[in-house]
Image (cartoon, rainbow, N blue to C red; front, side, top):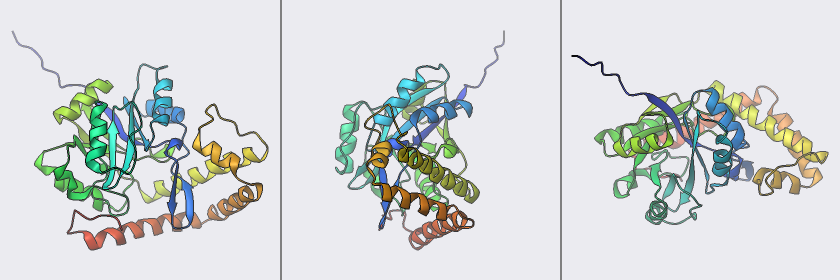
Amino acid sequence: MSFTVYPPVLSKADVHVHTRYSGFGQFRAIKFPESISRPEDLVDIARKIGLRVLCITDHNSVRGAFRALEYAKNYDDIEVVVGSEITTSDGEIIGLFIQEDVPRDLSANETIELIRKQDGLVVAPHPFSCHVPALGALVDELDIDAMEILNGGHLDGYANDAASKYAENGRWAVVGGSDAHALGQLGCSHTTFPGETADDFRKAILNRTTAPQGNISTLEMGVKWTIQIVLQADLLMFKSFFGLLEGDDPEDPIIKKVNNMRGEMKLAALLSSALFLTPPVPFLTSVTAVKVMEMMNRPKSTAPHCKPQ
């Protein structure tokens, strides 16, 4: 008697996704929202593109992840993993399967200890990036479960190549994440794993049976996503002018920020975005961003332990 052996079912997870609960970033004098994506919208898109597991990893907050988790309970074809991309004094660390916020600005070891106390898993995101906070070769000294070797947001390619080479020793599970800050980025880079559930995904990381797939952002996609973010922000600003901007969460950082802006500041923001959206400004901005990444990374191309300046 013979038996047919079928290969295991492979599913897709995005391990690195941001919502509007990631707060605000700053480049020199310019302050900007890290994302304005609603958690619920990300769940809807994840279902459409065939993701079985969606990891929400906002900067230093699990609030958006819990909103997505609650919303996803309405469906049986998607699960949300609560996570956070945590700022440490040594670089950023992602905690997955956690239940509460981990304080920022601790050392990497202290942060990992707090993730472990929640029975969480530890991922090193973009570990060899030179333009965002990264752990670099410190990964050798840390209790890490997985290394992100395919990050969809690193258009220059250096950080992904360096991480891929560094992970060839098989010490860590290897994963891919979109690092989506806009809805259109979701799933461009992702992780395949045997099974279909969040629990299967967790086991796959621990057993090192995950694999990164997908592609990094293209310049065309970068332009599209930048325009999308600006237009969505403009819509919020416009609604606020007429008192129509309401949210079901009084702690929503984007809505709080917009509602607290003075009228003249809102008008200035709308005029600035109109200027930004004028062709070919979005294209030139995206090209410049890629060139800046390349300039920051290339001088350190022989030093995978590089740290952002």
